[in-house]
Image (tube, rainbow, N blue to C red; front, top):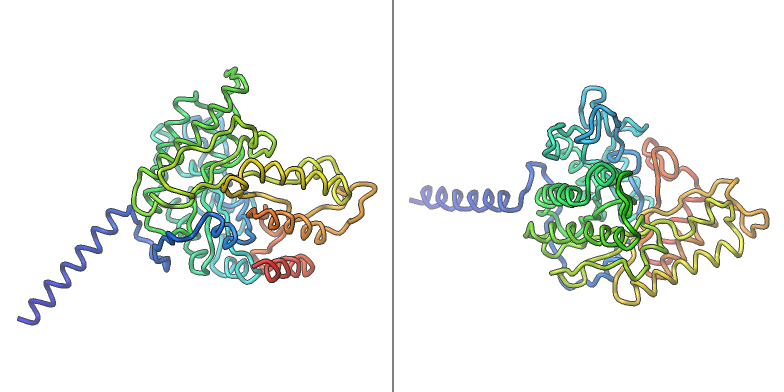
Length: 389
């Protein structure tokens, strides 16, 4: 009798587990993530807890384009394995040890940009390849093993979709992609965050002639379908933190009153993504002087007025990690890259933003050495973490 009872209980438990996995859209990949959603945390709490982040750049957003493939937007390279695409822009295969080093350096968030068209069948269905998805999720779990926040987006692929399909089709394709991504990952806790796009909202096909107002409307439609689609997949996604992307992630355009935050069924669970508060100074070689500081502060003030003061957190999804010698102004007061890094990151933290350094293989952080390459940069990050968190 006891054996029958144990057998019955085991069967019930196994059935419940199986149903849970099926209902959550979970993959077979094991994770230490507990699936917990912290309902008492405000978006400002999230922004503080996410600290300073690092991009896993030139890795999963890497792709090999071809004129022969106009449907999925990528051509077959090598053996057509996930690693072929992960490494095609110079990255080594991502390891748990490389992510461990990011955690040990003090970073609390890893942004994983992803080009979802890799390994996709060229049949117009936009079905994400399972093996490619498995590899992205495997690296996501490396991050969760270390207690890190993970931001997953659609990167570069947004440009392909927008520039090759009319608006109505582009919106439908985005809905299709985000339904797949959100369903696959909805078992994860709120340490996993979705970012709708990268830098290409506001673009259009060559043959389109939208007015500026119509482009803002297009941007708003793309952000809305992202939010609505993720929420519609249910489970943890009903309350997951989502990051909508700015108009070209440009601060002046994104703070324009025509940029609209989508209505959301969840409360206080949307952030806004922009890039580089000192971008104009960087490209005009004016880093390090008063004009640089004044410009960066003015950009932060725009974001504060448009978003932070209204309770909407700002995610600076890409910011400068290294200031090369040629980028400094002739009359710069500061010509040390690490000092400029500290100044910009501290400014963004003072405004309550979430700064995430843009990085590519063996640039700022070495995935081979598993550490920040410059000792001075490493100390800068550690000091900022110790003083702010």
